[in-house]
Amino acid sequence: MTLPADAPPRRARMVRVALTGSLRRTLVLQLLAVAGIVALVLFWAIRVTADKAAEAAQDAVLGAATQALADGIRVEEAGVDLDLAPITFSMLSAMGEDRVFYRVDFNALPMTGYADLPPPGAAPGSAPLFYSARYRGQDLRLAAVTRRLLVDGTSLPARVILGQTRLGQKAIADSIAGRAALLGVAFFVLAVPLSLLAARAILGPVGRVADAVSRRGPHDLRLVNQSVPAELGPLIGALNGFILRLRAALSRTETFIAEAAHHIRTPLSTVRSEAEIALRQSQDEPTRARLRSVIRSVEESSRSAGQLLEHALVLYRTDRVDRTEVDLAALLAAQVESFRPTADLREITLRLTAPEGAAPVLGDRLMIEAALRNILDNAIKYSPDEAEVEVALTLDRGQAQVRVSDRGRGLGGADLPELAQRFRRGGNVADIVGSGLGLTIILEVAEASGGGFSLSSRDGGGTCALFSLPLR
Image (tube, rainbow, N blue to C red; front, side, top):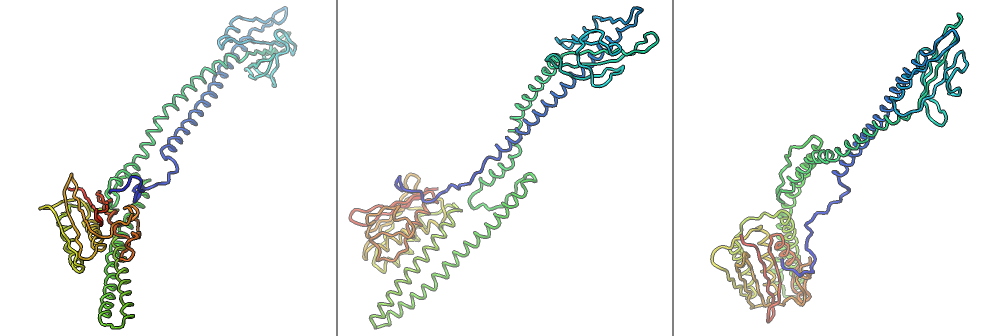
């Protein structure tokens, strides 16, 4: 379509969709959030397990050392003796570089060690009693054991308390927790590509359905028969239901347009015929003037109704163009012949020039007929009596061009974008019956058919209309 560079587009072909976010991004973020939570729970579980395992290991060593220390208490002739075997403390060094504190009481009296070392809250028995306490600014893990000694026939208690700092335990737990943190990070990093793959697999059927529907032509209203997961069943059902309703609506629209054209034009034609008969029979001049006004109004109404319906038909078929091979030469010749009676009434000569043979173009036959009909109608309608309208068909550079030249009133200083607006007419043709839809219909057809249309003024007066379509 030939339009100035600054002319606005005639119809928006792009369908605007309100986007509220990305389903793929939301799904990936949710999967990553789950992976992050799992990684944190994994780290916390391993850390707690490591702390308990390190504490259990320290308790086992500490309990064995306390038992060994208690076994070193003996009753001698000179009194009670304590044997501090080196192996007792060497066992504690296996947990790391920790400080060790001990206390031995005999018969509730301090015997050796740190007398202020915190005792347990309950009386210990022969099995180690473990507890924790704060001593000299450090956290200690302690074990207490009570052993009964026979002195001069009397059983007296000997209590052994052995404590160790928790630096070794903490170092072991931190080492395990560090490995757990690395494991959690690795799990999260691995979850990123897995989340992307999972989102792609989940949303893949949606994309395949959209791709299958988008590849269809404008008149392909077959039901969607795509294999999809069960979750997409309601969507496909709703889409097929919409297609069925659209089929019915389009069928009713096409039937209505055809019937409306018939039922509107026929009564108006009857009214015009009766008014023309009355005009010929009437001798009263005021009555004849009123009849002329009625005939003109009926003609305007008939033309407006016809072109409104024709425009509706063009708009309807524009959205579902049925491109077939059309012989433009034969179609143009038939249209010229159909307008000869109208032209002969005003002694207008229609001169057709066309190459021999067919001129095959691709397009909708009904729409091309509508465009040619409006071009010829405008040329004859705005030409003076006894004028000549030249119609020429040429084939050039893959285009079939129909050029219609007249000696009418011209464009009146207006340009095509202005004149092609709906119900807009030039200021120099107000006294001629018209609806202001002819150029609109022509441009709609040219745009839908992949062709072009332009208007230009002729030297010496008149207008030249150029309508082109791509050759097959």
